[in-house]
Length: 349
Image 1 (tube, rainbow, N blue to C red):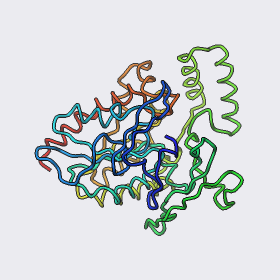
Image 2: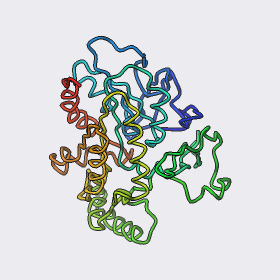
Image 3: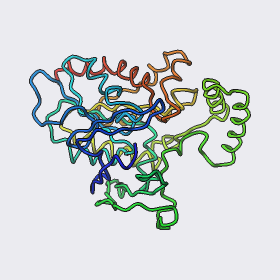
């Protein structure tokens, strides 16, 4: 999503332009983005009172949840709402955001009646919460650097910084020196975007394979082969229960879960390397299981269900062109979540 489609927000950083119909560019052409008065992608307004006989869930997440690459109706949240009778979903997904910003959005906008809080966390976000600056594109497509709100963990207490969020954007030349080592890039866990020597070698391997594989499917196979051969681990921050990146993310999630008066469902959206190739997700999965056990929230990790599909079909769940779940990825995630929600709706608590 372009910054031209966003509105500055002093606490969160930005929301979508409210009450707008926007045209976005996707891998298969343009698509329509509709927002409501609150500034989130939705075909309906968010109202406080809940209708009788309706189970309302508030859904928070980043661009995977917001649905970058497709129309509102194509997202797993919208598909899930249609699949489960009596379910209403308010989608607060915000493209480019991290769990720190999503928690702030929850505190700012979640004053509506609801039965369930759903945190759909793309596991790559463990990197986003540690950075105060995001490398992105401005309204006309030029590279720019934007400040974001962020937390520091000080004596096991969260300390909020960069609020109000600085409004100006920096260029590479004007970015303050103190921030230069604290920049987050949306492509930094992309296997072929990494800049160390080993990854340079992998790009050479990819280049050789690409020359022999001009078709899109074979190019994807080449990429997956290179990832597997290198034992690529995109998210080392999950490697230890006491690692600084994980401790910060864990504290944000624990604080958010404890602040909710409604039950909480944590849905971990896997990194593409875990979906399309044989990269080991064990550490990542272990951390969230520990968190769920300690916090008492519900946890659904779709990875084991995704791996029941044949490799060729599973690779189709991810769009390399958009860097997000594909339409079939949203469809299958909604299908897998449906029985999870049906069970929660039936629960007396």
